[in-house]
Image 1 (cartoon, rainbow, N blue to C red):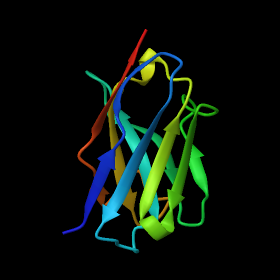
Image 2: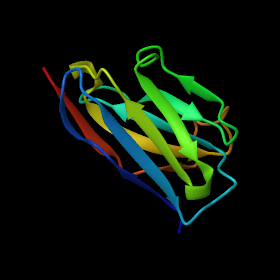
Image 3: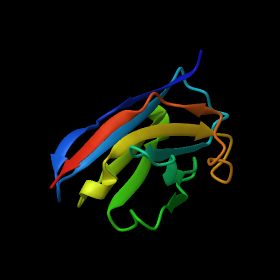
Image 4: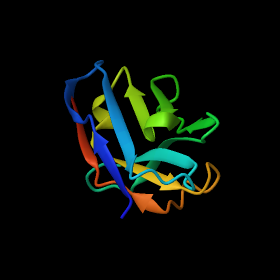
Length: 120
C-alpha cells in the first residue's frame, strides 16, 4: 500500500527555520503533483504549496517569499523549506499527492501530518 511518510516538524522560535520532508513509499509515479497543506487548531485545512514533477510550483499568499517547495524525483521526496517562521504558521502540516499540480487540492492521498509549532 502506498503511503506518504512525513518528517521534519518540531518546535522553533519565531524567525527560525524548519524543513519538512515527504516520501512516497513505495514509489508511485502516477502522482505527479505533490504538495503541503496545514491545519491550525479550530481552523479548516488550507493549501500551503504544491509542485509538479517538472518543478512548476504554487504558493499560498501567506507563505510566498518565506517557504520554498522542492522535490527530488529520484528519491520520490518533496521538501518544504520554511524560513522566517511566525507563530501564525503553527499547525499540523500534511503532505498530499495527486494526479497533477492542477488537481492537488483534491489529492489522492494524505500523509499522517507533522506538527510545527512556532513560539513567540
